[in-house]
Structures are given as structure tokens and as C-alpha cells.
Length: 150
Picture 1: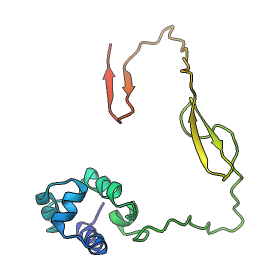
Picture 2 (picture 1 turned 120 degrees about the horizontal axis):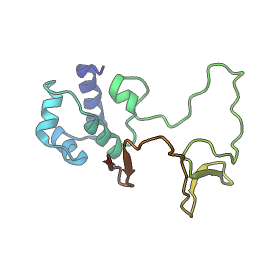
Picture 3 (picture 1 turned 30 degrees about the vertical axis):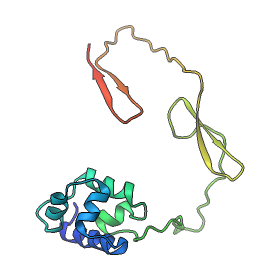
Picture 4 (picture 1 turned 90 degrees about the vertical axis):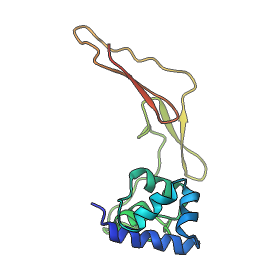
């Protein structure tokens, strides 16, 4: 659980770092000024939406740091070193790892992973002999979805 007093201190650190007052910060992330005031006074706890807006507008803010104080601010972009030096990560491959069933991961010349979507839509046939459809869910690119029940 997020300790509200510690969260407020870290939020004030972010305000100081960017040289913003509470109202300017609220305007910048797109929340009401009263919400910011209530949060800083300890009256309200931060919502997930509030935290996500901070992360979108201020990429130097680390999620774990703002929530629980672990990590650093501004965000350190270096990858952490494994504690056990015997652990080695395998080189990148062109195998389909992660993503969804219809994407393939390819490695370009610099070694960065890129997800390439297949150009043709692929249909998957399921056997529905004795099964009944409970729900059909459509996911849209904008993050919304619709659920249909027969």
C-alpha cells in the first residue's frame, strides 16, 4: 500500500525538480487543481490515473520510485546488473517470444527488438463441438473493449 505522506514528499520533489507549483503541475498533467491540492494536503490518495498521467508527461519519474520510494529520481536508464555474475543472458534471436500470437520479433542491426505485425490477418479455427460460447470480447487499438454475451 502507498504511504500517502511519503508519496506527497516524492511528488513535491518532482515539483521542485521541474520548477512547477501545484497548479501548474496539475494543468500540465491534465488534472483539476483541486485534486492536486487535496492530494498534497493528504486528504485524498493518488489514483492510478493520476500516477499514469505523471509518468506520461514526465518520463524521468520512475513508477516504483513515485509509488514506494524504490529506484531513483530522475530515472536512471541504465539496466540493473545481475547480482549473480554467473548468470548470462542469451543473445537475441528471431524466435517468436512474447508479443501476441500474430506478431514476430525481429532483431535489427543494432540489436534492438522490433515487433512486426503480420500483414495478412490470420484466422484460427477452434473446435466447438460441445462447448458453448460464454462471451466474445473485442479489443480496440485505443485501449477500449466491448464484451458481447450470446
